[in-house]
Each structure stands twice: as structure tokens, then as C-alpha cells.
Image 1 (cartoon, rainbow, N blue to C red):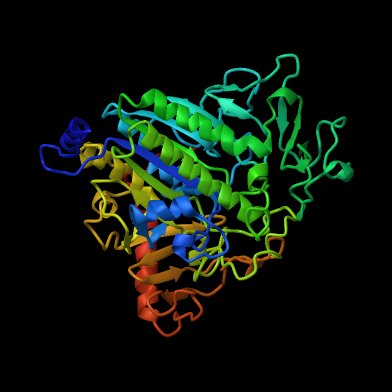
Image 2: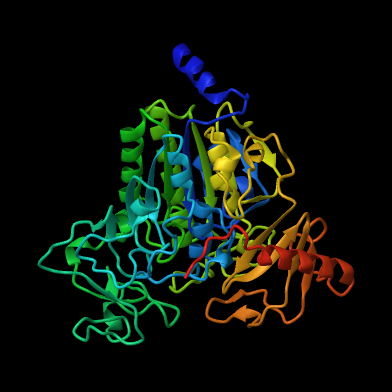
Length: 509
């Protein structure tokens, strides 16, 4: 143990005395809100493992995904580029092409310069292939073509077809005699295959909108149509354990060299189908149960790091791709059973929204010897900063780790900088942008309804500019735009300048 400690301290100091880390793990939840964890004030859902992680690390209160929806925020997490710079960075279908270009910097590509081995396990949703995908042959490009050495993923989301795991370049467990076909269309192209629209009696989970009644997989209506590939279809109830075991396996195989693991959880995205062991774990119904399951997954992964003797050498970050949503397509009583639980905490809005609850998310960092334990950081931080910041902590020079919009916030991650960014940009659905500058939030005029009727949630869209001071109005209830026209103009000009700066942006067709 003494030798391990001495070696670790040697690794943590470069020639310039910059604090460094050996391994990195990003655990990324799906649709988890600012107020969903006990360590962020929740009382209805037990999250002991994440609470312990917070007690042993840094808990951030001003951490932002770049978007209030999944594909855009995940694109930024890996590339360090704001999603609105890439027209393809929108909520993708399950058969959409890859939106990361061949020469675009990504976190695994940058870390490879320092000898890191990288893997992604879990939700991908950044596209596969270059067009029409043959799911029965090798798929190119996949995560293996954007810097990852190992990849075990779902192509998109658990409510979209194909409902299969993609292991490297191939669909796992696929029977060649039962080829898989996938289509996204208005009408079912496979007339002999029943759907939720035509055969609702086959559904065991009922939909609450007009999207989730296409292909039926495991009694659940999904978005999109498919035929064949029965042997490859996943089991929703075992998905958490399947992804967890693959993540643990990568850690065990890679422990002799620096590694980066992107562990992309599927919880609490719909359909919310927990393992039987977590069914009824909370009084909040399936949504609460899958968050309890999520917490267990985090605990199991942290325990595996300890068992492998790596917990002292590994920087672990937990966060979410966007804010919460209760009704996102299935009638699972998330709203009815929510009670006093507030998924967004004190924030207004959630998934899809331009209000702060859409992109402001929990973030916890555990890094023994690098970051202080049991402390809170109010530093302003964007997930687009993670590629450059982690690369610097790996000993890579900042100029070699540069991304389009992400900046070096390594001092924030180690608790040395309590301020962070001066400003950052987020977006609601449809690339509707928002600027946060200091404690001010500026929302430009955006067309669209004030509420999403089918989701029963606020969009935040308004034909008038919106200005909020989070110092006195964290819930964004008082629009100060008409009282502060000079500030509105200044922030509008700042946002326009950021959007006009394409000098270093990567072209996307």
C-alpha cells in the first residue's frame, strides 16, 4: 500500500507541478433532474451511493449540460463544441448517421495522445453509419471510429428501435437467419408485424402520446418500426446489469494502463422498467424505482474500482445529459405519484425547456488526492469543458487539448477555482439558445408554444426577451427584461458574438 501511495503521488505531479489524474470515468445519467438526488435535497428517493460520492468529493451547483435534450448534450460532452454549431446535433432517430466528423476532436481521441485506452458503455445516441444501415453486417462509423477502443451501446434510446445492443461494429446475439430491419416512417412498412396502433392488446406498458405506439418490443410500444432480429432484442429488466457488467469488465481489462470510461446510463429515461429487485423500491412509482436502480449501478461501479485497487487513482464524474421530465410518452404514473418530490428542485423547467431546469443538472466529482472531499462548488461549468479539462488533468498541454467551445476548467474540477466560467450557452429543444452570464440568464425571443401539451411541461418560449437574476430569483419567476434594457442589449450582443464566432468550428454537412 505504501508503494502504491508513493507511485500515485508521483503520477499526480507533472514537471510543472500541475495536478494530474491517472484514470477517468464519466457516469452520465439520462433525464435526471437537479432535485432528484438526496444530496441535492430530494427526500423521496434513496440515493446512498451518490450521497456517499458527494461526501467524498465535490458537489457542483452550477453545472450545465449544453442542452435540454440528449443528442445535443452528448455531442458536446465528447467534442467540446456547442451543439447548435452542428445542424445534425438534434434528437436523432435510431437509424440516424454519425454526427461526429472524422477529424473532429473528441475526448477519447485527445486522451489517446497520452496513452489512454477508452470505452463507451450504454446509451450512445450520436448516430451510427453514414446513411442506410445494414444492421446485419459491420457498421461504420461507430464509436470505434471517433476514438473509443471498446464500445457496447444501444444505438439511440430505450424507447426507440432498434432495441438491440451493438458490440463494436456488430449487433450482439443476432441470428443471421432472422435479419434485422429498421425503418423510421409515418406508416408501418412491415405490414405483417403488429404495432401498438394496430394491436394495443399486445401492450403491457401503455403509451401517453402518439409517438410510442409503433414497434412492440417486450410488450412496450417504441418509436420506429422494425422486423426480425428477435434473438438480439434486449431485455429491459436486465439492461442495467448488462451495461454494468460490461463497464466493470472494461475496467478490469484496462487496469494496467490509463483508461477513460464513458458509462452512459439509460435511467431514468422512458420506458422506466427497473430490474425486479428495484420494483417498488420507492413510493414514486417506476421513475423513482429506476433512479434507485441508477444509484445502485453507481455504487457497484465504485465498489469495483475499489476491488481492483483503482479508486485512489480514478477521477469519477457523475452528471446528467439534461433536466427531468415526468410524462415523456408512457402512462407510468410518474406525475401522479410524484407527491412533494420536485425533480428540478428549486429550478424552473425541465427537459426540452429553455428555463434553467432544462440544462442545469447535478454533478458530483470524486478524485481522492485531487479534489477536496465533502465540499460544494458554485463555479460556473459547462459539460463542453470536460474534454479539455480532463485532458489537462491527464498531463496534455492545453493547446493540444483545445476544443471549439470548451475551455480548461481543470482548476474548477480540483476545487482550486470557485468561480469558473464568466458565461456559457445552453439550448432548449430546436436549438433555441440561452445565455448565462454570471448570475444572469438571458433568453432571446423564441417562437413556439409556452407549454408542450403532450408533455404537460413548460417550454419557456416567448415572443419577448426574458431576463432573470438568479441571485434573487432562482425559480425564474420575475422577468426583468423591461426594467433592464441596457443589460438585455449587452447580453444579446454577447450571445450573437459567440454564435458568430466560427473561426475554429468544424464544418458539418
